[in-house]
Image 1 (spheres, one colour):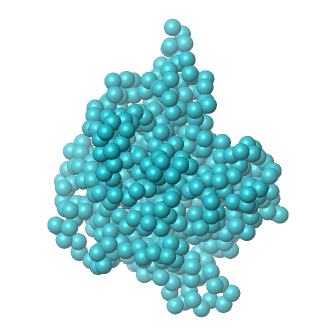
Image 2: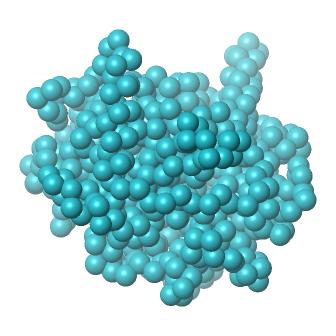
Image 3: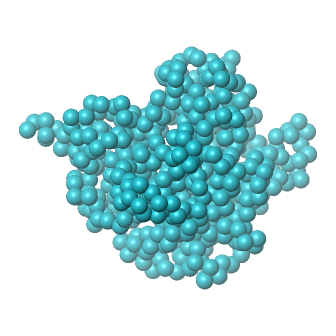
Length: 574
């Protein structure tokens, strides 16, 4: 009985920590005002001056350059064969063009596997953490906004970040093995294991052999501090709404995610990262992965990462967890979206605001092309569309004016990399993405609603959009998806791979056609099975990508389901 009480306490502690942390991370202010006027594009030289000054001030305030106990890249450069199975921190110099949104230094982390058979298999993991696009949403104290608006401290990955014990919501069985506490709590709450690909019960509690193989791979981790789902290349200035015209209160924001990844790929290439991991001279496998904002980051940066790290024989895959590219045409800045169009594609207003703020369509200014000694400014000032078109060699049309939609990002990936395996996983009842996309009064369906009525209206819009996403992805032969109904206890049904795979199970009878028109065998599994399918080295003919959509259902009759029902009743995430 004493052991049972201990496990109950573990489960209760986990449930409480999840609900409290997720409630704070998932809450979104309801902005009823119209979108702010977008400030003019600033030159890359202006952005670099901002980075230089912010870095100077940051360094002046340091008493030590790195957190005690954190392994850092030595001045002579990385030694990929040293410090195996150890998180190593690299801080980018200001001259690299990398920075957080406040201009302070950007950091990346890597851990080289000690397993010789796994060392040349690489997991690229993008941290999630919201998004922002104006003065209010990018405030450090914003109720939602984006993670780390004040920058990244040294030791972030082990202190307050991605695999820290104090950041439960950012851990994932894809990246790291779970602790015994998390494993025991998952089994008590969900009736099955965390990060396991079997349905074993207590007799298998101590076994970890079926954990995802990616836990043993070499890992590259990109923390998140740019507010732009790592898809921006735009330096902006925003007036304080409370003091318009007061230059002393202007907020300067560097939406710099694309340039952080660019700097990281250059660092890895300059130091022969891939060649050092394998006698073959190329990687065996490469998985680009992220959850929430990190899911968008993974998909938006996939072509550039693939170009930098993958060899001709590398098997490459994408797992975008809970970063669905909700389908809509992108309207021009200030262009009025007809009510009929917004009713058809409810995400259109969000994409109009975010894509132009973050500089999706941005081209270098004339000033960026004629700075002596800085040929890199032209590339650093180029937006997402220009970089995709340069890297893939294909037209990426998402603009309303030319008949495009955001669904073309996925179509271009599928067509350009036909043997790669792509995957989107998301809950159909995702409380967080539905809040970000349908905030304020931009959609008539949510105007005047509050509480659970507002939450339910946003979820209805989200499901409408997810039908459009399925219509986009269904015909693509190498783009799969996994969409269980809900798991309310963990971040309000957000991020299928957060903390545990438990609670993501779904089943399907045999001989039913999927959205791609294929007759499929029966399925009975969880998101871990979906991950393994993406990591398969078989051909698509031998092992097609999964396209699984779970049925609408109530929360399971277990401790997690009861706790989730109670959280939903009090609208914790809504």
